[in-house]
Image (tube, rainbow, N blue to C red; front, side):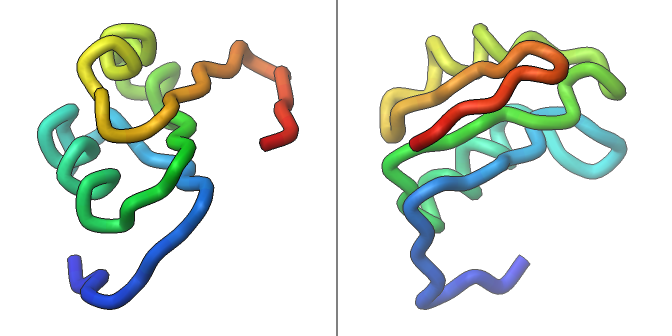
Length: 72
């Protein structure tokens, strides 16, 4: 993934899937530098978004329940 020079305030970050892991998701947050990250795809590819939130100390992580929304 080439994201050099890209910066975002809020990032919807996939934390699980056929080609991404928690480690990859953390690296994506690290490289894009958002102040807020929202874990996604944890219901389709089983992963614990709260565990990601606990371990991702480089951004505020908001875990949304199915159908929930937020204003950042």
